[in-house]
Length: 167
Image (cartoon, rainbow, N blue to C red; front, side, top):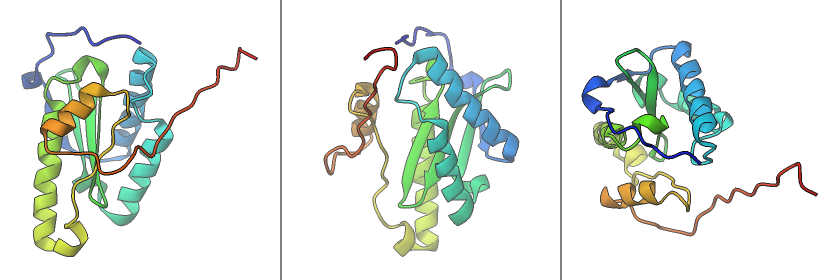
């Protein structure tokens, strides 16, 4: 696995906006494929996971309100966040931009949106904000714990791989 060695990336060169169109979804899918190709890291969503999450937001909520995008100065999508039902928060950032501030900004955006939604419908949005982390993602777990998240149950997701070139 490659490590994140780019220390010059600054959040000040990053802009964010709400989701606007299907072109944004294509860029989100590309971001995941780029991140996995660069790192070989299973911490990044599979494109199918994103499509399902997008489908749920599209059916039950509003993508233009519940998805936020972060772009580099060259226009390239470098991160996105989704606030889904439950309320559930997810955030994916390209490796060279990871842990430079997008994750914290995304969480602040999600918390602000949840607070706004609770004023409109406290019963629907009143539950705790939930998110996920893989067991081997110590940096994400530390970030989440620093921001008030805690474990409630055992991990539900297990990824098992079998290489096809071995018996």
